[in-house]
Length: 234
Image 1: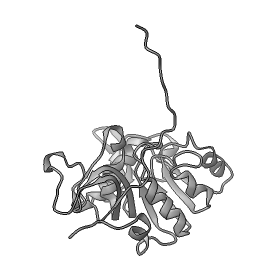
Image 2: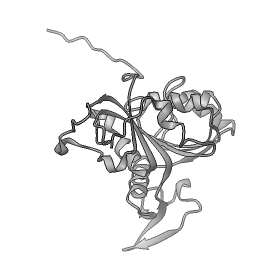
Image 3: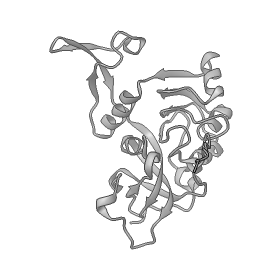
Image 4: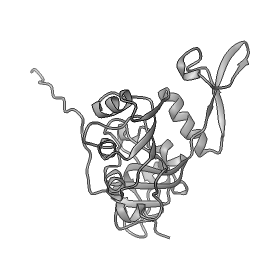
C-alpha cells in the first residue's frame, strides 16, 4: 500500500495535537524537513515538546515555530545560530533540556529499538547528571539516560519510494535516521519520490520503510545557513 500523501498538511492533519512530542531531523538547516515544519506551524497546535539537535536559525526551519509561540519544551544539544531560541531560553519562556549530542543520538536510537534506558559516562560530574541515577561498572561511574519515543517524527530524505524506504544525501543524513526510528508516526518529506511500482535498491536504503508511515513530495529544496566560497589560484 502506498504511503504517499498529497501534501504535508494532509500527512499531519489527523496525528498532530496540542502537547505532542515531536522529533525533528536536521543539523542546522541541513536535512531539515522544511515543508513538514511549515505545515506544523500552519496547523496552529501548541505546547509542543521538540526533540532536535537544534532549532534551526532565526526565521527558518524550527525557528518559525519559535516565532509562532508553539514550542514549550525542547530537548536539544545546541543553541547557537538561533538568537530567538537563546533569548526565549534566557527569558524563561522555554523549558530546555540540554543533552550531549552523542547521548541525544543514542537516546533516539534506543527509543526506536525498544530500549527504555542505557548507561553512559558522558556528563558524569556535570549538570547533565543532576537527578539521574548512577551506577558503577568496573570502577567507573555512569549515568542512566532514558530512551526517547516521540508521538511524531519529521524527517527529510533525498529519495523515497512509496513503501517509505528512504535515502539521505551526504551530511543531510545527520540525525534523520535516528529521528525516523523513534517516532510512533514518522513522516518524511522527500525531494524525489519514485513512481508507483518502482522501489529503491534495497542495498542503498538507509531507513527501511517499516519505520516510516507517511511520505510527501518536498516542495522546498535544500536551504543553507552560510554559503562560503574561495578563490582558487592557478
